[in-house]
Image (tube, rainbow, N blue to C red; front, side, top):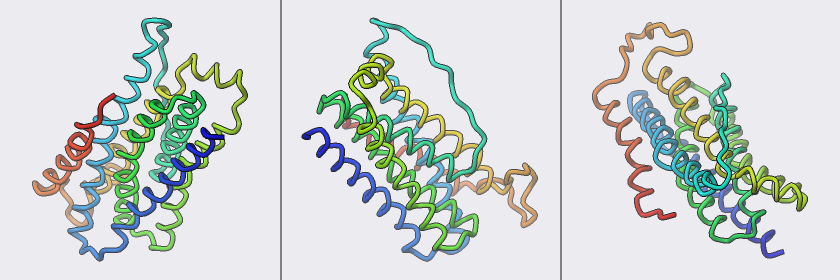
Length: 241
C-alpha cells in the first residue's frame, strides 16, 4: 500500500508539473520572431535533457548490473510526428517509473522521479512552443499538452498495477528502468533534431528553403539553442546518484 501511495503521488506530481510548464508559452503573447526564438530554445532544452539527463541516468541504471550480467540492446528508431514522439517518450518514462516503484526501493524511485522531472518541464515547454510555431489553435495545443502530460503518469500506474511478482522479477533482471529511460532519450533526440530544428530553421520536412527567406538559424537563435542545451546540464549538476 505504501508503494501504491508513493507511485500515485509521484504520478500526480508529474501530471501537474508537466501541464503547468507547458501552459507557460500559451500564457504569453509572442511576436513571430520571439516565438521562433522560444521554439529554438525549446529544441535546445530537448537536446540538452536527452544528452545531459536521460542518457546518463539510463546508462547509470544499466551499468549497475553490467558486470554481473552484461547484455546488449538494439537502438529503436521510428519516424513519427512530434507530439506522438514525445508521447511515446513520456510513456517510456512512465514504464521506467512504474518499474522502479515495483522494486520497492525508495532510493531508486526518487532517482528516477528526479531524472524524469528534470526533463519533463523542458519537454512540455518545447512541445507547446513548437506547436505554436506550427500554427495550431490554442485549444488543440492544450489537448496535445494534456495527452503528453497524462502519458507518463498513466503508464506508470499501469506498469505498477499490471505487474505480477514474477513479472517484477523479470523486469528487474533485464533492468527495465534503464532501458526505458534510454529509449525515451532516443525519442527526445529524434523529435528535437528531425522535427523541431528543421522546422524553425526554415527547412521543414521537405528539406527545401523557406519561401519567406528563411536561411537557417540566426546568431541569436543559435545562442538560444546552446543555452537551451546547457540549462539541463546546469540543473543536473547537483543531482547525485
